Amino acid sequence: MFGSQISTLALPLLATVTIGANAGEMATLYGLQYLPNLVIGLFAGAWVDRLRRRPVLITANLGRGALLLMLPLATAGGWLRMELLYAVSVLMGTMTVFADAADNAYLPTLVGREHLVEGNAKLAASGSATGIAGPGLAGVLIDLLRAPTAIAVDGLSFLVAALGLSLIRKTEPAPRPAAERAGIWVEIVEGLRTVYRNPVLRAFISATVTFDIFWNALFALYFLYTTREFGLPATALGLVFAIGSASALLGALLTSRITRVFGVGPTIIGAQILLGLTVPLIALPRWLPGMALPLLVLAEFILSFVGTISAINRGSLIQLITPSQLLGRVWASRTFIRLGIVPVGAALGGLLGGRIGVPATVTLMAFGGLLSFPWLLFSPVRHIRDMPAPIDEP
Image (cartoon, rainbow, N blue to C red; front, side):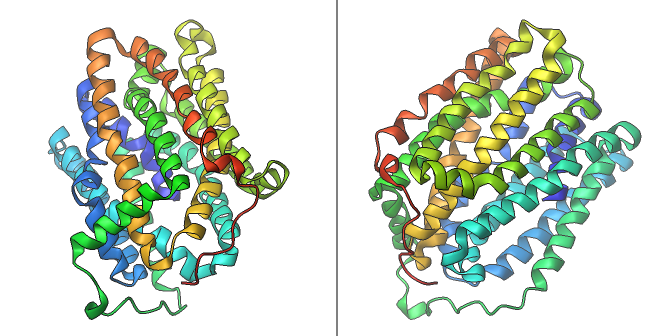
């Protein structure tokens, strides 16, 4: 988590500053990392449900670390090109698809379903805590030592993560014997059918896709927008994301208290409304350029705070209402649909950015998120006051 906070800033700046990427290339780079989800996402979920999850996580971390360590070597050797960044993004995305499915399916086994909300909150809190220092350090590293150094730190962090996972000693239950399994495509369809037929899961997916298509169109141009329109340096962007991480940490610490006061469903719906109302703050610097940094900080603070609260509640609810043997497939199906929209949003941002300009595209996309909350408001989510009892034990 610490390393990935660094690359969130360093990798796009490597493309824009070192290579000189344009709007179309940045949108392509952003979208390609999510493309593997469309190709192998559903297969990954079914495959993860057939295996122990921890070895999958270790392998994925080792692979991602090796890929990132290749980039500073390419820079030093003079053969860094956008084509190489595209290839790394695709391969990183491939391993992330497997890692995400295994990660979310492994947590109930590790902590027990009765501790899922606490477990998810602690993971979010620890990630946010590392994120407070990560972006700030990234800005310093990029300004002093250039982006490749920061990316090397991220590569090493994945190797440390693999070591940490290898030290977990809790026994993981054996997967179902091969004789009890259906065909791979039957299992994939079973995961998709579960998401479609469950009204809560269906509402989550619909709201997320609606919000994300606009958000990803905007974020594909975020670094061009902030660096070229307002001249913000890497240290300033590091500050924005560091404050966002501090806000996410606060959100993780307060999630249980806020959820107890308002209830699970109202908390999730309220968070979605606030997300839609906050994104337009990113467009305001177009008319108030002198306030660019404060407005971006405020937007990131609110988005990270409410986004964390929503993610913890959603993730815990999904893990509780989904049978253990289906968790990998359900999470992969959800991710397939959710991240499958990212290349669409990125392409939309790149297309509009080239046609009507980056500031106009950011402004237009900033208001689209307001269309997302009705999916939750007019669903069974609004009636969920407390977390339900686990559907089964892993």
